[in-house]
Length: 118
Image (tube, rainbow, N blue to C red):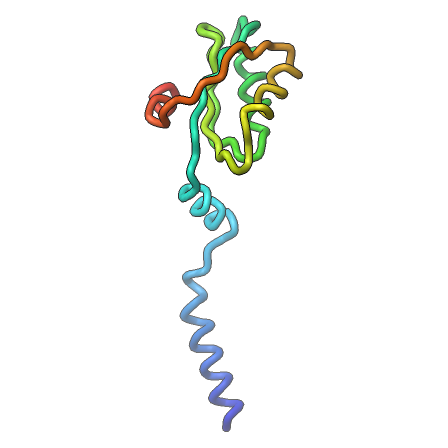
């Protein structure tokens, strides 16, 4: 009889929790939304076309902890939102330099400013 009660309780709790489980992607997104991020503006020399923008964006986006990146060759800037515990501007600078461009300035900007640029 004890075993029957244990089995019934197990099934009851198992059924109640089945609909509330989240996928690992949902959990990761929930965690990332609650993590503090910062924004920077990178001034870059050498960008001349849309291909340059794509090279910069894909290089920086490949850094773990980068949430958003937008590069524009017209003004020679890249705007990046990232998690400081996971990524830093030195990694970004290294990626940009390895692609053949020169970082001439890095400055912190408010997140609202960054989001208006994206």
